[in-house]
Image 1 (cartoon, rainbow, N blue to C red):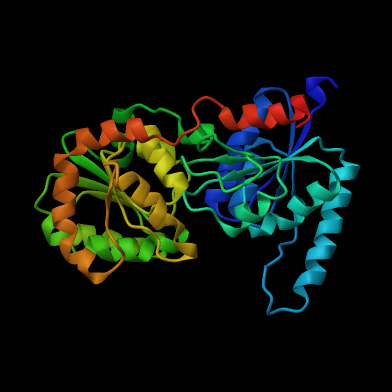
Image 2 (cartoon, rainbow, N blue to C red; image 1 turned 90 degrees about the vertical axis):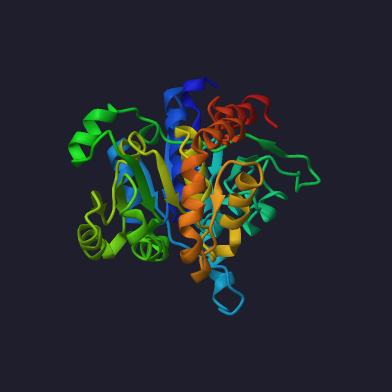
Length: 358
């Protein structure tokens, strides 16, 4: 079969941590002349990205895994049959899954339809979906160096794929000017994601008296409390640009000297890409994945960790000082620890499945 006719189905989960690796893989496959089609949950930000990038897609119903709902099994069977039908009618050669439980029908369908399947695990700690996938998928790509969870020996360290838009370099001076910021101050980026902004907002506002005495300026993605946070910065006469959400993260990374963020695998990969000294506050829910991601970096000198509690609000100033003082060392460690897939390892493994038929 001509390489140009290889058709790849990319199935993603609802969060950015699941979607953006799929987008990055899709971009690279398209660059190599492959036909890429996305199957996604119904999320506005995902459809916006795919339409902007010109990728065809189909929104698929979601299945929530729970034994408490007796209809779960029937819905899973129905969606698996629907996914099988889709894979066969569209004649996909390969299935790429970047997670979560919402992708389960496609995983099962790829097995029943005898389609080669590649699953990407973003986090240090394996999720239940990845553990289950190890029995079905032909290959599992890992972002972090981990032990092989599969007796089949089908895992490989590939790194975390980052979309092109998140790596785009801008003129630092131009971006600073656009935001009304200056070169003579240390620029701090604060962002906690859609679910995790509240504690980070509190952490910063509770420490504004301390921060106002430093030579700092802020970019703060504050979620729905952006107007309140903006007023707080003004009260303390701290130069800041506050957003509820910001689409072009690369533009922000171009001018960031230090970041205070969550510890999602995607965020840590972007910190590696841009070599940004970081204080990370793991989101304490969602299976504790972020804590293990953060520990991997912190134990090897790649970042500092704060827990989400009142004690961290009190100890923040000391950690912040250490991060500023050791910024060069942190950058060096991030370069050594980087989990970014800079060599296209994920796509190489995906295409090898098709080429070798194994």
